[in-house]
Length: 115
Length: 114
Image (cartoon, rainbow over all chains, first blue to last red; front, side):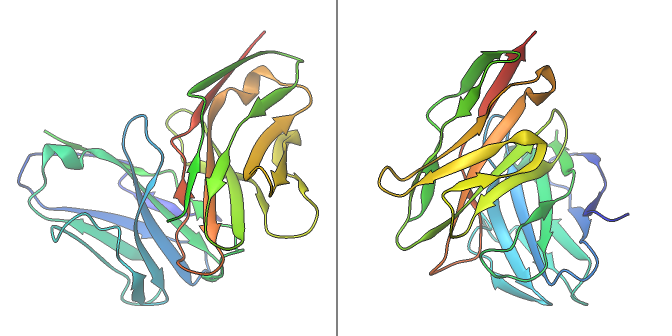
């Protein structure tokens, strides 16, 4: 498809388990972003990649969260030792470059529920 | 710090009437401002953005927004609301002099009644 693709669309996991969320950005987009959206809130920035490197990871809440983008395209958000407070929608987005005037396009999100 | 505020949790409008969803911003330097819409259980869809130039920006689905530097506002408007416009609307700011991330407001729920 032409848009940002995220898998899985829904994930239910038990507290303490490890979770991976995948994002396939729009073809050719070098900038990739992860956001987290809790119920009733606006999206919160987690991490930004320019190419393969994390240019800004200041939004990652703690060291249980990690993201990679090894080939500069697909990215994986990894959450270790999940907690109930991690339950949220995880949104991935991409833009042609990291320039501030570029439009950022979002995927449909991965709904994570930790029970 | 850069941020946006959406002072209204919900806006109710009758179909056919004009609508306004408010947004104010606080940044150091010149801002890039964005509006996104989110339908139930869906991702965010881009509506429009202000980069520079004309203060009135036109976007998707008949929406427009007016950038007002003196009032630090970027209100979203539409001359005639449709029931299908009912959704969650997010304002976001991206400073031009630092950082890369969009900072979002908490959102405003728009309900258009027939």
